[in-house]
Image (tube, rainbow, N blue to C red; front, side, top):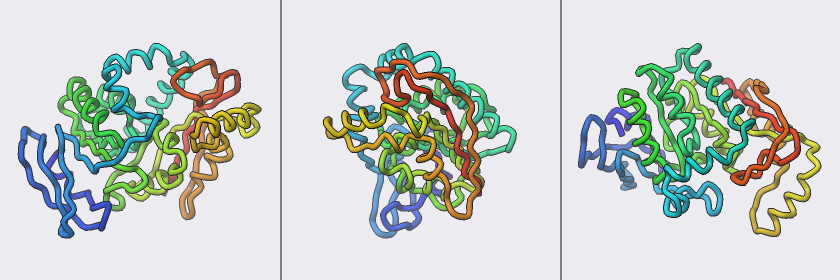
Length: 290
């Protein structure tokens, strides 16, 4: 974590500013802590600011996957098993985000629910060193891994990493030029609406949110919902439809722009249930513009 990053932080419990104590420093702070006047303290661990967020159980639980495979092997397996058309959709999303960052001259960008760092690694390869990027995720473990990988790709890019809950972001209003998310906010399940609202709160200009999207009348929704219920997974697949995403992003006093950058028929993917095998899917970008 870089020293000046403390200026955009606010305590997620009381809302107060933080002070910083460095215990190990090498260009950026590797070990240390932040603390507010109300006595709330949070640690910096291997360069990552940790707000003690809890990972999702059974869904994007990166720590458990690390224990089973290790992150390098996990990434290899996921890449090999992801269908070609989904990889193409993700590539188009990465290029779209890069274009918006460069064309709008955004200098400070926050990546919401960055997960395995696909977008962050792409930006590290493609952007110049003027971009300041913040990667956020529930998982401390995956952010420690992401930080090491991005330092290998572009050691000159200024990047901060924060393990936190995106439904209660520990940042002041309008701290970043733009918030972006590549299929991260959509995985927040019943907290997705709050994640969208928080992302636009901390952004000066807009939220650029990419989602794998299914049709409103997808015929397999009911059977999948029954499967989810039988397996005690609290998620309604209607929330992944075009209509639901439009509703979630349609915030008062903000402009909503929706663009479709990719569409195809989904094939079997053992990693995810969205898109739905055999049914049309889209890669849509939802821009909430302030």
